[in-house]
Every structure is written in structure tokens, then in C-alpha cells.
Image (cartoon, rainbow, N blue to C red; front, side, top):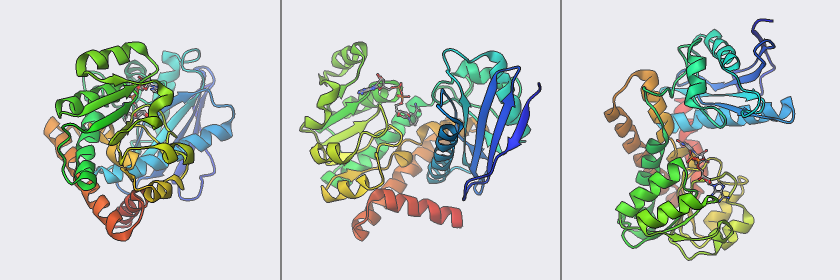
Length: 344
Ligand SMILES: NC(=O)c1ccc[n+]([C@@H]2O[C@H](COP(=O)([O-])OP(=O)(O)OC[C@H]3O[C@@H](n4cnc5c(N)ncnc54)[C@H](O)[C@@H]3O)[C@@H](O)[C@H]2O)c1
């Protein structure tokens, strides 16, 4: 059986939801276009063993909508989209499956650009790219987006520090980095360079040993994150780390990190305000990676990426000033800024 594309009923506020199937290649995937108001939709492809089609639809729509907000806030001429391949990346993925996925992306005629996400490597994208010119994040092109994500988080964190502590100088500030992966380790390096005192945690001993040796970081256990007397918390591991319980215990005055979906629920934004903790929304500060991917889409040089990172830091400054003046959570102000851009 060849590739078949089925247009599914689109959720309200979304442009398209497409089911792509190719039984010979073992492909069952969903491609969701949330908005192409600002340009073609761009967002990664995730492979995950979803328990049901409904779970996959829930994930792909939530992620696609998130990309609209992230791309708009980053000042990119790109809309929001995302794709998910239903299956176990370790067991089910094959080059033929990725090529079939590439054909599905190609058949959308450039309305959607794809790249790596959870479960998908640069090698997998290279297979997809054999069938489509709308696959990016390829090695030898813009490459690993993580260092760009870390640079963006670092710049935004300094803007946040200026608002919260009255100065962006990080020397002597106690910063807790949760998760020393691709982004977290690079961020820790920048923070160390800026004179911050690092407190770090991870579930892998080798990452902790590296941070201890390179930055003189204090290592803590993963379950001790919310018991630390720190100035700044940088979540760079998982989503959902900020909930009613953890925010109640968090001692930092500023939160700025790369992890996606840090707030367990929208209401946590109000709790953070009540506790006097300034939160820099994840989708605003972690856009360095998609900026890097966008430079590949548009064929732009390094200077272009840096300009956009500088612009994000400027938007964080504006968002914090408005949040303070209006007594609103930063998340609400950020969403309003994006919605105004989309309307314009
Ligand atoms: N890589 C990017 O460019 C990028 C861009 C935007 C957002 N993000 C988000 O940033 C986060 C980090 O991305 P990454 O690419 O560095 O991922 P990664 O997988 O390289 O690193 C994650 C690190 O977190 C650690 N970890 C996992 N569970 C933990 C726990 N309970 N406590 C402490 N540490 C734990 C892992 O051991 C790993 O070292 C993710 O949420 C990702 O979605 C990444």
C-alpha cells in the first residue's frame, strides 16, 4: 500500500490535521498545522508509543499550538506545526518509515517544515530529507540547535536578573541548573563564565562529575531541588516541574530555563506571582533552537541567529515591564503579545 493522507476533523482554531499512513513502511503519523498566519508552519517530529490515537492527537495539537507562540515571539516568519509518528522509536523506526514520513511532509507542498524532536535523530531526518526538501536540522547544515537554545536562555536570564535583582551581573548569584544535558551543560558553562555559583542536579552521575570538575558546581540529589536556598532556578530537564507543591517550596526569586512546559497547569502562573517569584515563560526563552533551525530554512548566516536572540531578550524586557505595571503573570503578557502579533 502506498502512502495515504487523510484529512481529519480539525480542532477549533487549527488549520489542518492530517493522518499519514503507509502500511508497507509501517508509518502511522499525524501532522498538525496550527497556524500559517506568519509563514509556513515549522516544528519538530516526535516519535512516541502513544496509547491511543486520541493521545497522539492531544499531543500533536498541543505541541503545534505551542510552536505558533514560540515562533511568533522569536520574530520568525514561521507559523506553528508539529508532527508525531506513532510507535516505539527504539523498536519500530526504520529508514523506510522515515522516507515515507518525508513523502508525507513533501505532499504538503512546503506548508510544514519538520526537524528532530524526541525520538528522532539527525540521521532519521536525513532519511526523511531523501524524499522532501522541507526537512531541516540536518548535520552539515544548521546542526545541533542546543547551544543556541542555551545562549538564548542565558541572555534572557540576565534580563530577568536585571529586573529582579536590579543588576544583570551574575557574579556570586546562586543558580540551580536542573538537568545537565545538551542545553543544561552549555548553560552551566555560560553561567560559570559569568561568575555564578552553580548548584546542579541530574540523574546521570557522569554529567554531575563533569559539572563538578569544570565549574566547581555543588551537586545535589534530584529530589532536593526545592529545598535549596538559591537566587535563580533554571529547569533544563523535564516539563511539569512547577506545581502547587514545588512552587510552595521554591526559594528562588527568578525562574528561567530551557525545559518545555515547565508549569504543570496554567494556575501555577498565579501562584508564582503570589510568592513573588518571577517566571520567564519557557516558550519565550528557549526559542534559540528554532531560531537556529529557521536560519537553515531561510539560508541565513550566524549573525542572523544572534540578531534574533538579542531580539528575544528585548521582548523579555518588555514583557517583564508590562507584567510588573499590570500586576499580571508573565505567561499572560507573553500570550497577549503573541496574539497581538497574530492579529496584526
Ligand atoms: N535541545 C534544544 O535545543 C531544546 C530547545 C527547546 C527546548 N528544549 C527543552 O529543554 C530541555 C532539555 O533539553 P536537552 O536537549 O538538553 O535534553 P537532554 O535529554 O540532552 O538533557 C536532559 C537532561 O536532564 C536530565 N534529567 C532527566 N530527568 C531528570 C530529573 N528528574 N532530575 C534531574 N535531571 C534529569 C537527563 O539526565 C539529561 O541530562 C527539554 O525539556 C527540552 O524539551 C530543548
